[in-house]
Image 1 (cartoon, rainbow, N blue to C red):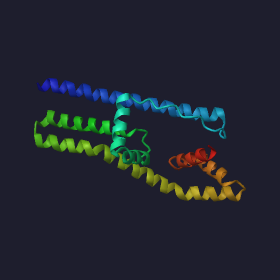
Image 2: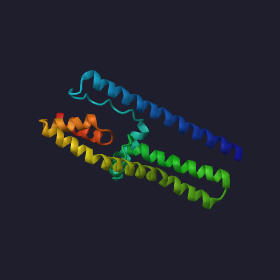
Image 3: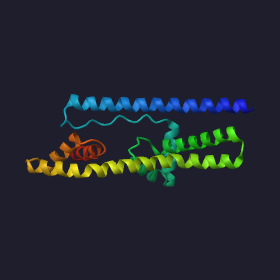
Image 4: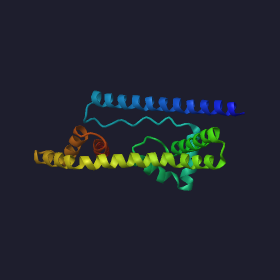
Length: 191
């Protein structure tokens, strides 16, 4: 029985890792294509509609259920602050997978129900801790860039640029995350 449990858990872990790698590579490819399109179409061109995200029907139903209960909005806000391109359903499904993996591996190694329960609790909070850590890093990076951004905005306006042109300069000259946020503002104003 223990060998069967080990095999099932290893297959499950391998599947999760493969899914994660494929999702990462797909997103990375989309980012590169988007950047190339921006250079081909020109910087001042109005961005085209973003292609619809490929979401499974299960994830769509989970998102709808979470939205009805009022849980999705808070999760979406936290994911946006961490700059994670996940839906609330995907994040909560990942949380469930973490709980199962942590509890399963601990049960496989120790067969202690108390440790298994503790591992399940850790698996529940691990994704939230990760999102919080990403939020903190992003906020610190944003704060570190704020002085240079203000200088660039002021100098751009002094040299005769409009406020929108100065913001566009920040979007192109600065590094993420501040360039991403100013880029969003510029795109929204241009629409």
